[in-house]
Amino acid sequence: MTKYPVLSAREIISGLKRIGFEIVKQKGSHIKLSRRVADRKIVTIVPNHKTVMPGTLKGILELAEVELEEFIGNL
Image 1 (tube, helix red, strand yellow):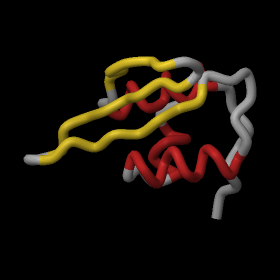
Image 2 (cartoon, one colour):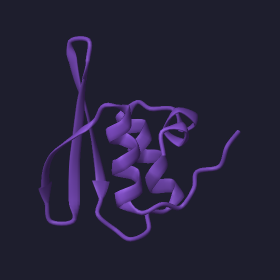
Image 3 (cartoon, one colour):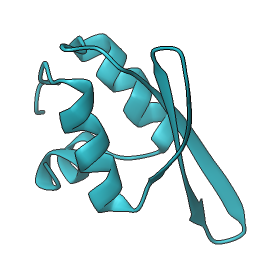
């Protein structure tokens, strides 16, 4: 199993955009992204920090319903 890397918010958002997410809005230091899959909308939140810790990245990807390997392949 691949370990969750320490990335910046910019890198995470870039990877999510390649998977099909779009930025919906930003409130303070949190950026909301979403994408449509079939007939439902999937939403995730990325904190706009210079470094996002592995546990936070895991939560972001769980909300986004994206596997770590798929995400890393799109960085």
